[in-house]
Length: 110
Image 1 (spheres, helix red, strand yellow):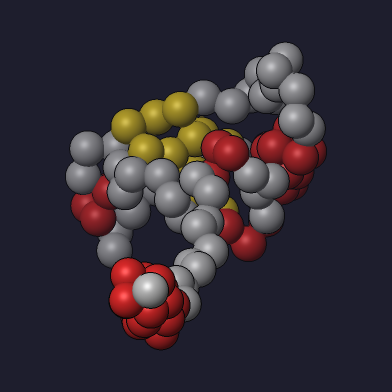
Image 2 (cartoon, one colour):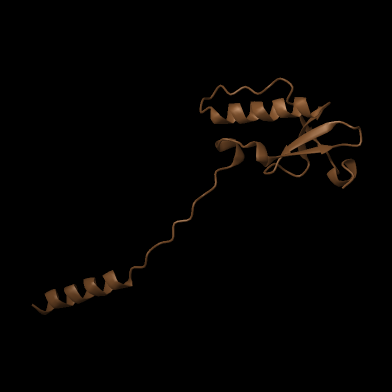
């Protein structure tokens, strides 16, 4: 009989000790979720062309160059549309060219 009471006390004690776990939402990476227009940054380079960067890309990775804001808006729109599709055959606009800018501060006169 003593064993039963000890077991009940142990179980009651363990139930009191359990603490609720905090659940933190995890933000998916940019390539795993739909992209918003506001997440893109457009900058004008020394060559007077426009370059676009997503705010989660590396600081020196851009796409471009583009001649005007109309073309930039079309590219960003294509990113938005493609990222909303959940298929494996995602194809970006053929005007999307990744570019690595070694010293962005100097290139964009920041």
